[in-house]
Amino acid sequence: MKIEKRSKNDVTILDLKGKILIGDGIDELREAINNAIKEKETKLLLNFKSVPYLDSTGLGEVVRSYTSVKKEGGVVKIVNLTQKVRDLLSVTKLITVFETFEDEDKAVASF
Image (tube, rainbow, N blue to C red; front, side, top):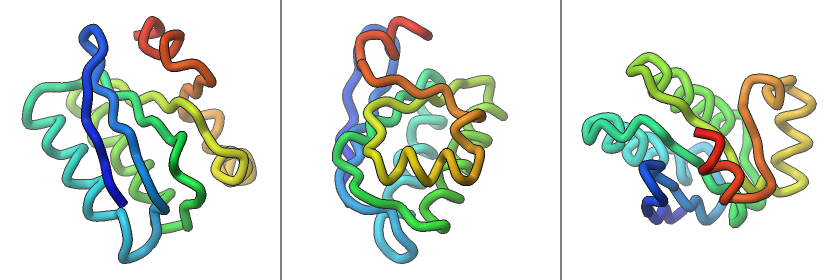
């Protein structure tokens, strides 16, 4: 998995690319979130456009990221969910926890 970090206004966008599975992508996501917290970047937008799949471990890491940032007074939102990932979030009822968007500009404006 690769993660590219960029900013739009005062929102940090993490473009996630690849699957988030046990042993693949978990450490990268954790490191990116921890670095953002250290740098006081508390408005995070996770871009799932290039994430075709995540397993339960990956889902757990996304939830951990959400709670870690929230504990520091920040907010995590999600944009561009693929259908498989959206279905997983719906089945687990986590779609009600995360604020999700189809449009990046609308997501950034929501902060």
